[in-house]
Image 1: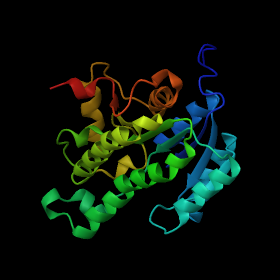
Image 2: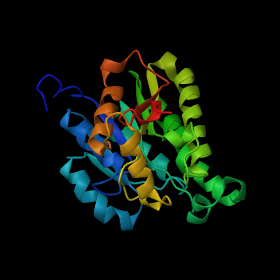
Image 3: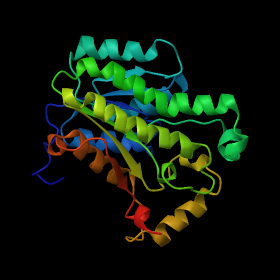
Length: 259
């Protein structure tokens, strides 16, 4: 890391939600944020996930390692109670979670079940609203909220199916929250990475074809990686981006500009 940016986030404290393993986008973000000086709190989904997440969080010198299933009543409130009691204030939140039942993810949008759609929206979109609601009182000096989207929110991507509309809702939420929270100095963004070889992405049907198409069509003819996403996210939570809010930031080697 160049010395000029090594301390970009020194003195900032933030919550990272969504680390599952060392290949996850959330971990790529957390690793860069820590390298640039941020102090981190990290959540894990459940006891099964803890054995994978805790060693990674400890490697990041995370001050807090807490359970949080956004579908479990009271768990998010407990996390923010701990943040308030331990830190008092908060500078950023990284939201990198999404879920859809496999049958609904692999089926047509017109065949999506009501329960599957509701759960996908609950975990992938509404949880970002909830995080913002809880974070707002702790961001007394302003801050940044960043979520993860995908190009399928804007264009039809084969086999992305119901997650396209869900991510479109997430991007719209980003804009509305940026408007509502801007007067408090809280900036809200969505980062839209190109296809990444993560465990979560492997659930998308014919994912290898999506990878091949991204490499072929992107101007840079390469895949991005979790570190690329982490660097963009670090910029968005830093003071260097204080005049930017409500944006969808593509980190995809230019794939989204191609016809």
